[in-house]
Length: 440
Image 1: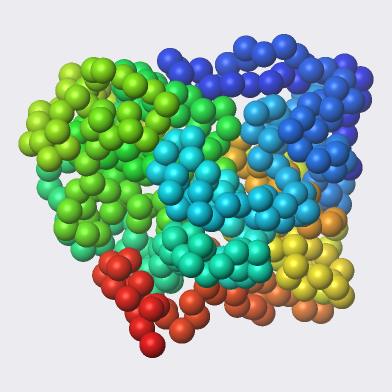
Image 2 (image 1 turned 90 degrees about the horizontal axis):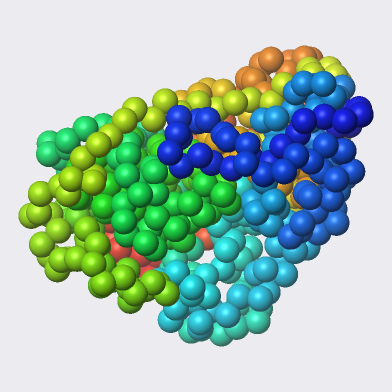
């Protein structure tokens, strides 16, 4: 149960764009009573959001005098619109127009699916999305969307095959980096490219950024500012509620030209064509083929170390699981349809091995826990290693869905459903992979 007693100084937080170093500034009115806070959580989502979260053996320790813990429950109104019940997520799939998606997906106002937070967190699988689409639409109409879903599985295959190689130049090393830090103008949303700056501010508020915009941000960062893709990729991953390690870092490598021997470029004309902004002049006013030949604009020269860290919620230890049947979940395997019966304990493991190495923001961690507890009844939360769970070695059974982040867990693994299970392993490019998928 969530512990709330009396008045408290809970506040909504937003990002201070001029002083970013993980400092949140209080700029929105205080919400003091727990009833008001619960009502705020319900904005933009199903009423199921109003139940106390998450479950644990004890109660969440308050962050101050009766206040909900500020890390886990800083409760941003805009981001909560992405927290959905399972029924709402299914309805989101059913509302997809695959033809409109195919023709407008690159536009910032296009008919994109907005499914990425729920696919990333394992709530819905790629084959599940495909089959639900094909139940309503023709294979021809769904072809482009299914191909785009395949990119995610391709990146996962590369990660499973190459492991930590995905976090360094995977094929074509570059030696022209100016630094391995964060471009200040990008992190400040102060590039002067209006659509880009607006999207970065939206990222800080909601944890979401349009996929095409991610490519443009990466291109400006890597191929104009010459910031190393890994540092900038870690910065973006930190803020994404749909942060997937393989998709994120391999996409940055694709843009930077270290996974394929070509650098992705962007200019103002492309952004104007794919957005509602019609900006005449910016630092991107040039022909795309000129981008990699130009000097870095002055505004992109300043940089800084990111110093990203994960702030963990302060939770009481779980009641012992000795003698219980236990299902363990990672933040990427929150499938509510997996082993739906005959399980005594369901536990989400927030393992610092990964969250210290690749930190996430308060907003992202809040989303993971809140979304997980919405779709999985009586989900408990454990911060630490699996071996730290009291009684785990004496549990009757312990199982988990296999993921690259939990391979060292001493558990029985079930395999996730795959979009194209007959094509696995490492392919040097997506198109080589796609050719194998389409082969008779």
